[in-house]
Image (cartoon, rainbow, N blue to C red; front, side):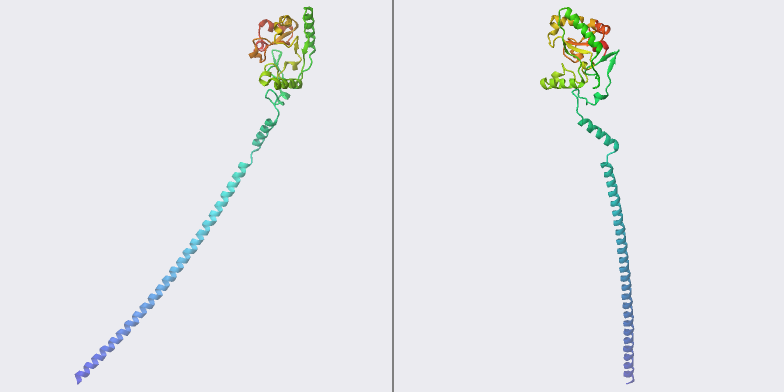
Length: 286
């Protein structure tokens, strides 16, 4: 009986102890679970805070980067506009050159190919005291007029020719720049410029403008073969004249043979040129 009671007590005590142990273990387990949840929440909160901070920093960085890009873009735009303005605005020297070129292009050209303004400033050319006028050496448009000395010498020549039995009428003497311009243009319109250049001078390049040149006798290519033409060629120097465009010198004088065209040089110089057998350009060495 006593043994049974003891066994019961022992069983009860063991059951009680087991219950207490279970309760204690349950409490410990519950405590650990609570702590774990709190830690997870704290970690989650920290993570969320960190993530939010990173997002803010990223946003700030992105904003700063965007601002820098905008500033850089604005600077590049300003630089591009400045460069474009510099390129689009020509310098004063370029404007002057362009204006000068436009004036030259719009200015009317004379038959020589030079603008008419060239003949406003060009100076007469003298070689060894002899006035030289040809396709290279020009006269200013205001130059010239009737020359009394040359006219007087021409009168003496005509008188001598008449005494020899030849008529030496004056066909053409002094011509102004404008007169020569009109004549040349008429010839060029009729025969073409290339042909006109062989027998008619450009304005500013005509000996007739000097008042020292005359066309006498007859405007005939065969005049030099006539008795009157031969007498003129052989005696003109005695009165101060030369046949200005002799036969065989066309490539030098620039004009065809003109046995009627005489140029006054004075007796001494005319005689020297005649005796040399040279045309005036050759004699003067030009």
